[in-house]
Length: 623
Ligand code: CA
Image 1 (tube, protein in one colour):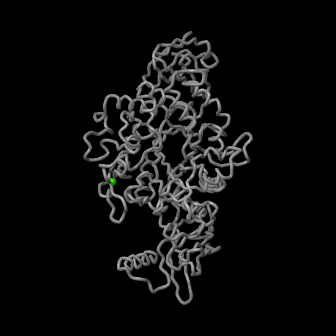
Image 2 (tube, rainbow, N blue to C red):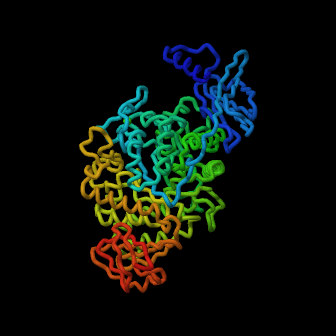
């Protein structure tokens, strides 16, 4: 492999501190390889090495045409575009690079595609997504806690630093997640973040190489194997990506391809974080420029999606990961911050190539109109923008339920907040595609938010698992984490799971290792999630709800094969409701079965709701 030979020569020379007398060395090739019979024909290859931009590339390979080659501001990059037709066989394309009297040959491999069965399956409202931070979930491999040459090692004494969790830790707990009723896993980014320790980049949102899994999490091959193992259990995997920014230690930052590769490289400008203004018809240019061109934080250079060489790179990078890993979906970070036309172009490129795939954008918007703007085929009077994006993270749902469950009932408060929020679903193209959640890695834990009330917590969980959309459970929430607020967010919101590390004093993954309240929460989520797996009314059914009255809320999920009733009582008192109000749904049903306890009840003239009850019932026409 010529490529590796050059890499070896380069690294030996580097370690000896030698300067190069030859004109060029190939240091990096992105993507490292490609496939035949891909659903896209054109591939951009970014070649990096000293003075490579001075070279001209020539190839001679059946079915492959070199369409264009572009040198840029830095002399060390050459961007080569290949058209790979269906006639191209698998094999190695020799790319000859010539400059004056020197010639290099680079071998670029075209692999056969793997069978796509059970790969790139997408995710939808039949799923329950488990969101985890791989650094905080479980440490399955102590040997990768410290990687020589990387800037940060695990330090369990400091919650703001890496803890050593990894993909091996996840692999050991796939059965646990399956047993919990989870059908999809979303990891916060597993891409290399070789950042300085004080930056706390265990979150993964400061990429330093877009083609590598961080070695403290594992390898690219381990990531692929983990996805295969998830697929064997009929679970899906969602990859977290970020096209808005990279980490300041990304290798591009030492030698930017073009001056315009990142925004505001000469003078720092910070974003205003007001993503909702994109949908605002009165937004000022000043505010929009700050939002889109400003940096998220000083350690995260803001990528310029007006640079076509960069956007081609990002699209090819995305397709490479989808094809390589078999991953089923993408969660795109900071969706409101990059150039929105590019984001639509990216979504279209991905979904055209992989039609069964799904993408959810992190749309941190303050209300349904601002969130709905980001879903495909925006109905109503928008500005003509079509994001093409199937799914959004439904922050308005999250805010309404978190607050609504914790508040006193009132005209616009408590349960009314949830009711009015759902009443705005006509704004969405398809609210069933919204990802709904009670907490995530950027929010306080829901149990803390609902004033540490166990019954209220269960009510919120009940809504999460029975309302429209694709539910996401944040790791640790299955144990009702949020009891203690100890210091900073890194500790309070992003705890390690006891038992995930060999020296832990208990194992929360086992029933014996959990406290009673942890088991109660775990059992409730598990029972409801497992039932949900087969509940077609939740996956596909419509919704009908009744105006909340007197601290109570009743709604139904309706499907021709199944009718589900959800009863919620946020007060400390028993409530008796007149069942006549619900006759349009209850109709001829005679009994109801509690899906958690399997208890049955006859449907009479009243519905009795116990204090703080949240219950889910399947309606039956006969005993
Ligand atoms: Ca580890």
